[in-house]
Amino acid sequence: MAIHAHGSEIHGRNRLAQFFWPLTRPLFKRAERIVVPSATFAKAVLLATERDAEIVSPSGGFDEDLFDPEGPSARQKLNISDSAVVVGYASRIVESKGWRIFLDAFEDYARTNDGAVAIMIGIGRDAKTLEAEIRTRGLSEKVKYIGAVPRSEMALYFRAMSVFLFVSKIENTDTLGLVAVEAIACGTPTIALDRELTREYLAPGRNGVLVEAWTGHSFSQAIDEARALARSEGGRSILAATVSAYNSRQAAQGLSERLKEIAPVA
Image (tube, rainbow, N blue to C red; front, side, top):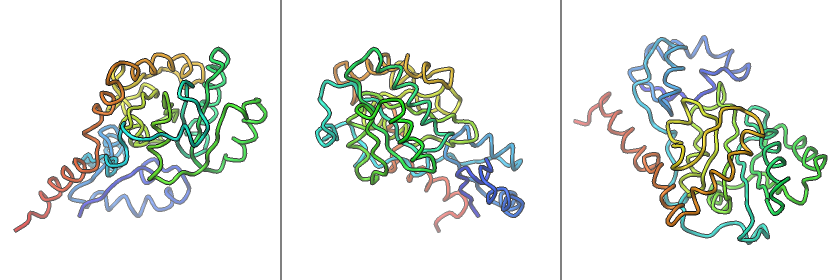
């Protein structure tokens, strides 16, 4: 038996997960293999179950036919000029994913960068609060809250961004951060908290910037440094190549090879 541990069963983020944990924990003990999305999360599994997670496979990876630096962007659709600095967010609209931190960062950056625009993608329990906050801060002309976007169209928005802010607080929230990997796969430099998890795929000076503090000012100060990574010749393609190991074909092949160790094909 193989178990794929994705996050909530270990992090126990809600009452339902906590209720079922006494029932699911014995399954981890019995499993022949445990599959996890990152090496960092494997340590959390070991701590919670006293079992090693032997297989690391990035949540199916990203679809390289969709997430690619070449192709159209959503700038024309959103009436954003090619010269504008576009700062992006894509995640659930909940506190732990950092939407307030994102607004703080963008507001700080826009004070000295008049033409800057923000794109925010996602839905969640704080969506109405987010919309009200945008109005209260006087950012309605600069922040474009898109809401839900089909996965098949996400690359259009990533390619429209000058920089992507992965503003999640990370701890007890993320097990990989596939959305950040997808942004990088589209050639978009990414800024994230400096944590063991984000260092698995974000390489400072190559595909993004890592910041120490979970504050808007910390992220804002890193935007121009991150933007510069994509402006060199071949920049976006070079950026995208840094996460090629996370594409779905390689992820599926690696997972298949490891699972064959459990039940070898005759």
